[in-house]
Length: 260
Image 1 (cartoon, rainbow, N blue to C red):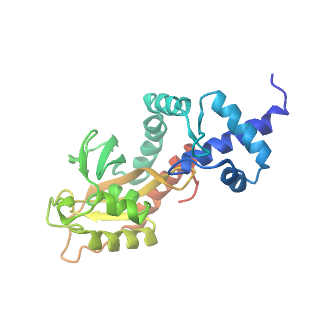
Image 2 (cartoon, rainbow, N blue to C red; image 1 turned 30 degrees about the vertical axis):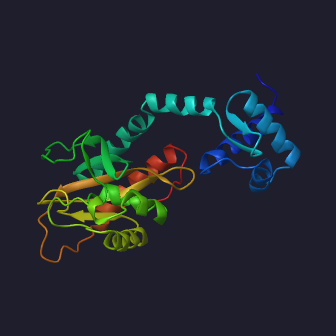
Image 3 (cartoon, one colour; image 1 turned 45 degrees about the vertical axis):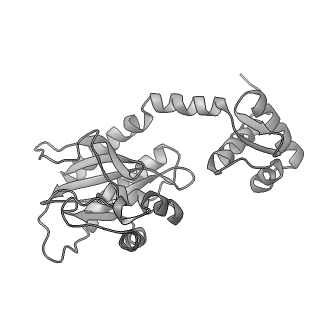
């Protein structure tokens, strides 16, 4: 059994790693100490120990620190064990138990949504959104649920021109200004909606799964048969409530905010 006095040092070391993981590039020890509220001497000691273990890389010419190879290897091992899918499966099964509709887990892959899991009710219906399918992220609700929580500059980088927008059914955002308006509305509402954007006769609602920094790592969606009327303005708040609850549950399971 380790000494209890080692626990605060471990927590501080993990806090340093979390901080570095949220930054776009290496940071100075002074900046890390300021953000974490730690003495500068303590921060230097933690960074030195983490660098010796390979979890932090010191860039002496820049006087900055970034994540090291050991942190990358740890993250790669995490991905190899498919933890997100394992944690999500029971959440999706409980969701379809409440809604009776098909549930999906999707992630962003560039400007596409990649579907990792599809859980179906007892009487399933055929949808294009099967496991391994990729769709243009601006069309499905799951894609937009994630895009709505990305920085505006990142969305612009993903969709730099009109040629970046793929059309499937004649519905959905066709350029960046339209996409920005839709994302702003869905971010304000709290969930994304698509009605016939992917497949005529089907609609879906989706909510993002957020990590501890508030960034979207995935989205949970509920898909169901629906024929869009000329207005196509329904938002299905009851289905969205269950879907948001499932997304919040999965967020909490991966260390993110446990709020719907």
